[in-house]
Image (cartoon, rainbow, N blue to C red; front, side, top):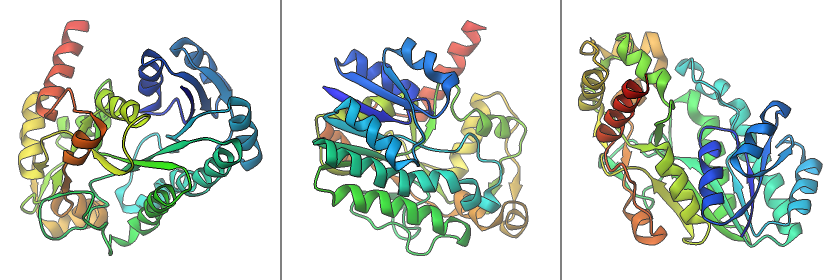
Length: 313
């Protein structure tokens, strides 16, 4: 099948390309950087250098590729450094989720593409009331912290636009990525005891190994319709997760910080991430995509990553 993968050198894209190739697909893969063209060639894709916010360039690239399926994996975030200014840090990603998606969808429709798959996120966008674990039927947060409002609006745009497009539309809500060096910034913070348990640590997180996220995306090329949570089987309260990660990393136990102090240090977003956000269920993705995560728990996945790194070192 002919695949147009927009955003092929991001966290998931570089793992997705080889899996698509191994599944027998022909992949046209985009990057905005000339320096990453060789990487895409080496992964087995046909590279295209294009700005995802340039409607004409995207239209031309998609027309030349003539894809049956378009996959949107474009982001503009290399590292999240300041939770207090969440929307500012996600500004480029939000533009790519809104304008970039609109350009891709217009190009796909003009070219006769059959199917579009788009990246979304699950965890902090979930409604922060009721059960600790949410399904795709639960609403997104109607009143997120002020500094996440533009970001959740961009996520709503992705999901509404794809699900209501005239193409076959699939939205993949990925959990928090780890694996192959992804999430190293967070692990470093735990090692340095910079990620505390805030208040009662009541937030719940859902993780997904980066290779499992890529595998779910490959499955979505031929299966499913609508919105899917792509997470492992082990949504975990922060009060359990951070100490468990600290133990795996050989670090000291985390500090405990009251909510009022955490709000000063990390703002409302940081407090929400550590005390209020909800996890997600993967039951629908398992049922409809014919997919299951290889690493059913982040605990085993992280342990394997660390053991592999020690052996390699």
